[in-house]
Image (cartoon, rainbow, N blue to C red; front, top):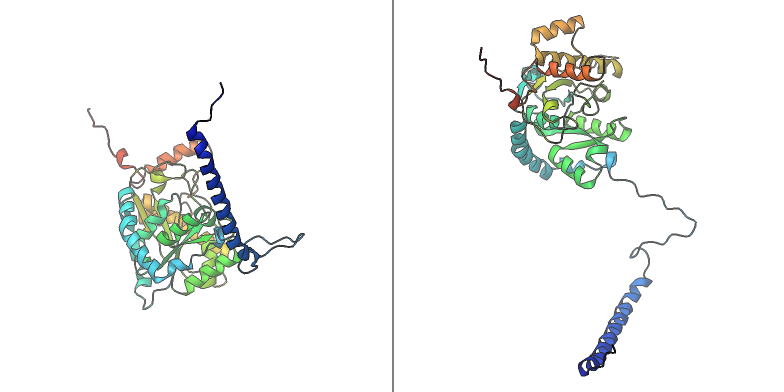
Length: 342
């Protein structure tokens, strides 16, 4: 079927031509304006690269190279105080309800005219551990507390790194090997009055039992002279352990130990072993009592943080029995017991 050219269709053709001419004129005007800008070189435009020349890659600003100095400025400290004393404290109370014991062991440091910087070395089973530590650490250290955080997890994006640095005063470190730059910066922070929370295990427990300690805390103490305070956190693994999709509220217990100082000439490895033994004794104390834990520690029979040697279901069974020894770690919904009907 052949279409006929109606008067309305014929009248629209000149209008379309006018619009096309107007568009061409506008495009020419824009090109005329931008032509001088195209002729401008560096620094108004990105410099050209000669053929055959390889430009070095831009240094990464993520991971261990993430800048967190701004998080210790006065405005950031004020904002963090609001966050930690409000939402963080409320969240920790609602999810973990921590019982804190052993603060009297820090009284000698607290009574000093100028309390020294301290390295807190707790075990690590959950992301909840950092919030619990921020709430449990007493003044004068709480307000000047830096948290050593995994660079590959908390600082892999700009947004996550900014939130971690602002809310937790987190500092990025490599989990495997503490680089020279990171260790020098941590030493500077300790020397200028900041205290540090560092997890000697290097990461969260994968199965609910502890892991062997790495030497980061011992190394920093040897280099700065700062005392190491061993800490045992009981219960966070069953509330929000690694692999759990959502937290299940329960109870926790935080046990602070007596400060440890490196002996003269003591190697980092030996001091690290003493720190691990102290945290192990605190773990035994959390499940029993002070006297029983010290007797076992003196005999070298303290239950290992790493759990039994065997693997598989027997290890998980032993973990369930281990958690029944104390009230910490039991979820609130598990406290209910069936009545004894005789």
